[in-house]
View 1: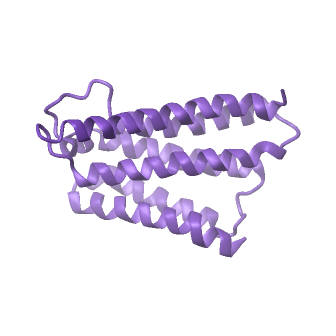
View 2: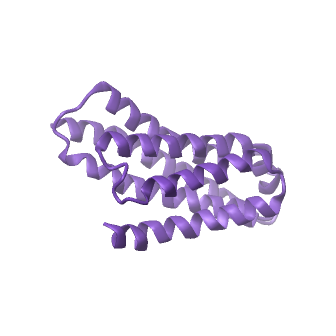
View 3: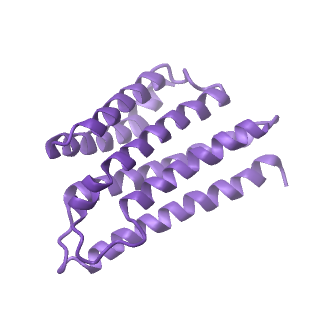
Length: 186
């Protein structure tokens, strides 16, 4: 077993747990829809976290050509994957009450969620830097930095319209980045 295969197993477990937790939360939301109407903002963030988990599980494969491994790289990659798992758990806490509205839950956990998103963005930049891809494509760092600023602003802004706009913008910009711009810029 290579060093990458060894690490890929653990990363896959963490990503898989994040996806499982997220999908279980969405399933509970669907099953409880009569007692607690689903909230669009919460569902958009669920879609965002789903896409981030799937996209970065794929990105993790880019480490397969790495020949020299260090404990520091290992820790960065583990923390990077754990930050995405935590996004799923913060959106859908294990002890979620049947009657707690998901909009209230989002705003109650807003700082934890966006703080974890900030951690993820910083760790995403760190793993890209360690891999030597911080400026590949050239607009990657500004892309991450602008999301860092917008998520950071969300820690202080309480207005629901800001959170709606940012959640939708995050989704559109991540899809555009992953499926269009990244390919054009490479």
